Length: 371
Image 1 (cartoon, one colour):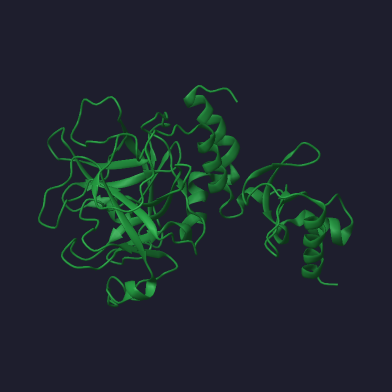
Image 2 (cartoon, rainbow, N blue to C red):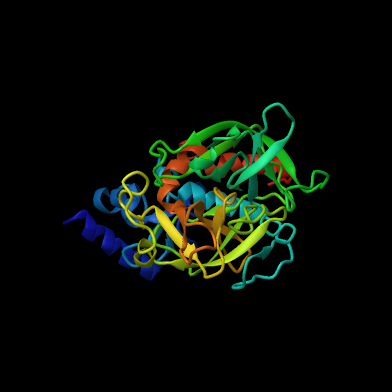
């Protein structure tokens, strides 16, 4: 009798005998009081041991989804399954998240953002030689208490060199007296190992900050989308980039409502280029978005392409990467698809499966909240 048959038989059994409650990646409680994680029954070693070897009890059901049914699993390496650490970190942030009273808007054009509307938004700073001036030239997203998600091509500029600073909590990037923002130094950069200029592929990087972030109404991490096939129709891009191709850079954070553009249509706008795009647009690790009369511009690079769910939680789907001259053509912009790189991100941001407990403890300390 095959293991696959046994797993399917188990799925039928638990779907009849147990209720349905929690989602994939969520923390769950075993009958012995220990913690587990909801993952597919087919990926849980305890299911095999219980059915095939008669060792231990059947795991509890988390959610019935046919052959993708999830169970409460406590295998030794269960938290190292790709996506688990991201889901648990998101659940952690949501336990403490402060949601401002801002209505959910779907549709509309580029417009100034509201205070605390995008509390994960980061500005990347570059030092001007021979002065104390900082030039803010790219964007990013706070995804943990220590890391910023951005584009690899933002790590260095021809004019100002390597990225040095990160500003969080800012609305007007030129306002140096506001009490909402906090500046950090970049302690370490993590460029994706497969990124190589001038190629447009693997344009993703992580910035490690010099200290832990203290969350406020204006500074909070965003969640990561882990589903590579999920592309919502309505998406939002944010940044302090140019307001037009020949325009000035925005001082006030801009939000831009865009629509997802499928890969077939997107590829029509970008020819194969041996130097920078030798395989054309690759749907697996790139996502396109646009709208006539709306576009991300120079200076928006590295910033998030995001989706806001009805509960007010932001999920990062893409990283602003490249496009045609902004607003001069109807071509959509191209963004690095975050879900493709979840394994790489998790192994740096939450190493050794430490996402839930390690960051829950740190988060509680910086927020001064008792568990």
